[in-house]
Amino acid sequence: MGRGKVELKRIENPTNRQVSFAKRRNGLLKKAFELSILCDAEVGLLVFSPSGKAYEFASHDMGRTIARYRNEVGLSQSNNQGFRTMEILRTEIDDLKRTIDNLEERHKHFAGENLSMLDMKELKQLERQLRIGVERIRSRKRRVVSEHINLLKRRHRALQEENTHLQKRLHELQEANIGSSRILGE
Image (cartoon, rainbow, N blue to C red; front, side, top):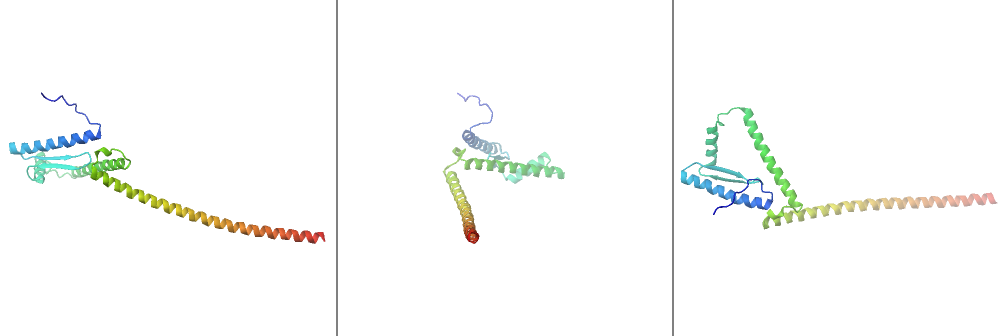
């Protein structure tokens, strides 16, 4: 009795997708190993996870296998500078895409999303990073509040001094007004 036919489409649930990736990756690596042993074939296999982590199997030296492949498809004879530049740019673009994906995933983790994919060690590390971040935020907040309080105290002192000055002036004007009314009244 065999399994039912699996519809080939992207698995939407991130946890199920990660589990399926791990199982199928291991199966693929096992098949590559078996092919190299049973058929005495030179096998090189590279697999990059969605997070950018590399997994590889090589029955011989991977560098030698890649050089042999390049030679076979005519890449090693290509002296075309444009082709090499394109290859370098593609590699850089792929690296940047992986970096963006990693950063987006970390952002989701910091927001408390997609935590089911993390193991205990990663959860503890995330918790530590969040704790450090909260401490920095609180420290900055205390500094801003303290600066604001000091500014308000300086304004308060300046207003008190101005008020004292105005009261003296009012008192002087009232005394001058009383003195001039005495002179007129005499």
